[in-house]
Image 1 (cartoon, rainbow, N blue to C red):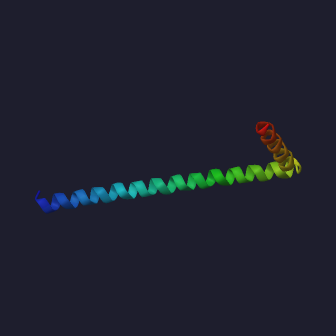
Image 2 (tube, rainbow, N blue to C red):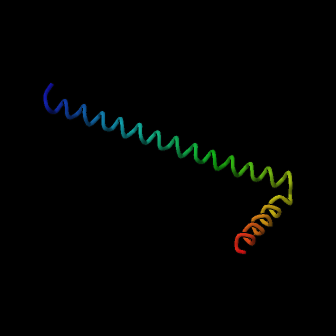
Image 3 (cartoon, one colour):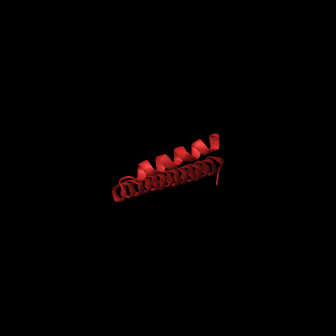
Length: 70
């Protein structure tokens, strides 16, 4: 095997690794997007199930903030 053949094989191996990393990154991004969609849907479902829930949580957060400021 001469120098050019080895170099070509090394370059192909690098390209394969880069491609695999790109695919992995894309899969991770898709999973992150799925998690965000699930969080959004869960919040939406909770808000529909208990319409006053958002206001209750806001009031509780304000109360905690007020207590920590004192």
